[in-house]
Length: 390
Ligand SMILES: *Cc1c(COP(=O)(O)O)cnc(C)c1O
Image (cartoon, rainbow, N blue to C red; front, side, top):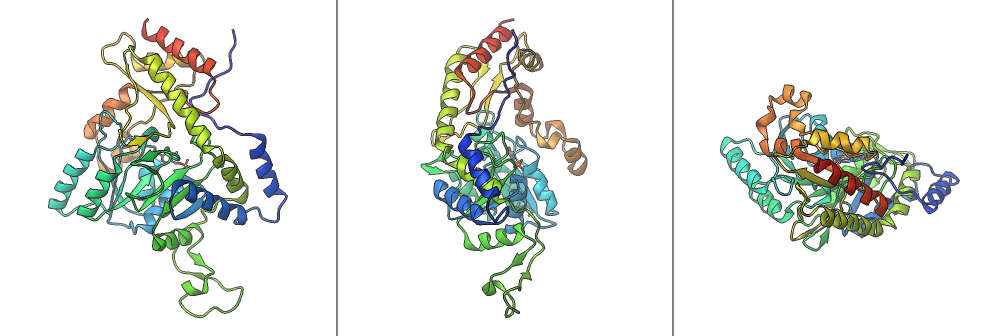
């Protein structure tokens, strides 16, 4: 029997999405037109945040968020080792140094107790981080209230890497409401919750941060007379106030984003349903299913299981067995501190963050996306049972 490959993640594109992009293509604006403002307003309203700045990717969103926080050479940024390299790389673009806080072995998010202990030590040594970046891994919110309390005590900026967590809820607020952070960053890469092809966004409630994010998005240039250092020369005039970048998103992408956003709640509901099916079907099998924070609701970007220790089948064999059966399982994440570049630059060792390393050796991401059918999911579960019982 030939069956089509089941990926671990994929986008869902409708005729409405295509029509929304086509409409922009037939309009006078291809970039920096009305579709971007509309997308930003809609996503801010959805999340309950005040100011949204849409950009070309979450990587560029992290970069301008770090710049807006004032991250500079000589500064330190801390994040989770269980993340995509972008969370850390963007700090290096600013000339800052990076360190990590080990994960909690149950939630796979940055451990708040490790963070508290590391801050206490860093405070004694006079080497506190300027920015701390919690990553809502798999869409499961971090304990943001506790991190925010530590931010008040030690004076660091909190930037949520919410690339997995559009539509997730913590303590009754959507991620992006920024009740316990200065900024939150979303990704619209096709594997994420909604897509614009490539794209990202920074949310903040702070008008000054918002102003700086706008500048960094487009060359540090302003056209607003009230932001200028002296009187405008005329209607053509602009001023460059900072060294910014071209991180602009296009109107085609923003129109796709708005069209996708209209289905976000349906996306999340189906993802939660798929997660529930996995969790029920895997009960009694030698795997750990995802933790759920009592105050949180995951966006279910990923469904990650951890294989029990001492099985006949190791993670590599389970991975290969599922791939051979046409199931595109994956591994999230190779701990960033173990990457050759980070080892060489900062001297990290494999066991520098042992919880992240132990998690990495046992984890497996099962297919999770809106259009995954019940039949495909049941097939995945049957294959996993077959492999683990071998
Ligand atoms: C995908 C992702 C990013 C980067 O997103 P891009 O839009 O591809 O730049 C950053 N952080 C995390 C946790 C991600 O999963």
